[in-house]
Image (cartoon, rainbow, N blue to C red; front, side, top):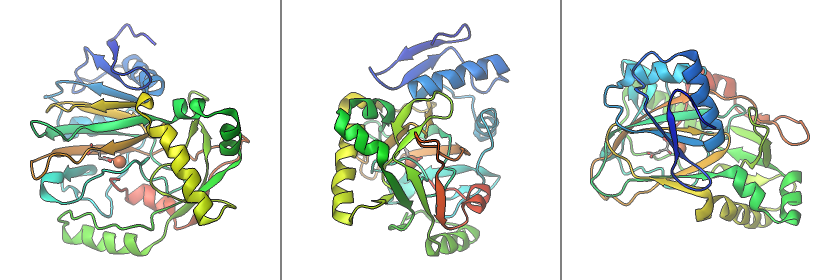
Length: 304
Ligand SMILES: O=C(O)CCC(=O)C(=O)O
Ligand SMILES: [Fe+2]
């Protein structure tokens, strides 16, 4: 992929590229947006440095060019004037997104992607790592690939939701509803990307169990597949600077926020774009099992 509108500089061998020469606070043309989208789909996560002029308004406006954005959410505060902007001020909480996950896969339409903007970053540490689930699938030996091809997984939000964020009263009420509602969706383990047609391992932290396997078998196989996704060759590690923006394709990646900065301040803000229903290699779609996730996409989202 090359673009006549900006430079593309890969930052690792298999995932991640920096886009150089754009100011995201400008009103970008449809052609530029289309090239950004192609770069995102090819590199899975793209980075923009030095976006100091971009504010929350501009971040939302930029995100809207790629689809509908999610509004409000149950466990993490958003900006009062901008319900679309998750305010992830990790300085104020013990919560850390330090586990491998694809965002919100317990609903039947998980996000297309998210755009994260760095406001305060510790001098050292607080990096984020992304992993390419397409190259992970390609790395599988044939017999494991055949196994993955056949499997479907139940993804669930039934886990510890103690985020530690200081929530305003209205969000506290939403959180109580959210934590008492189980969202469960059956997804294909191998997802066909809706734009590139690539096959990738669609798993991560919200997988509860593979359909038809015991919990023990399931846990062992999940660990095995996760090892392919998270092997260093399939990852890129981003060292944040204030003013950086990262945009990941949540349909083809997992990520991990590295919690190695103690009590130092780290503050980022996220805007999330609604995705479509995943499709497996047999053409079958994911199916919601529990919880009304259409309401979830409309009114709620969650940070991890
Ligand atoms: O803080 C980060 O670097 C990423 C946190 C995260 O998992 C998310 O925003 O989805
Ligand atoms: Fe996340």
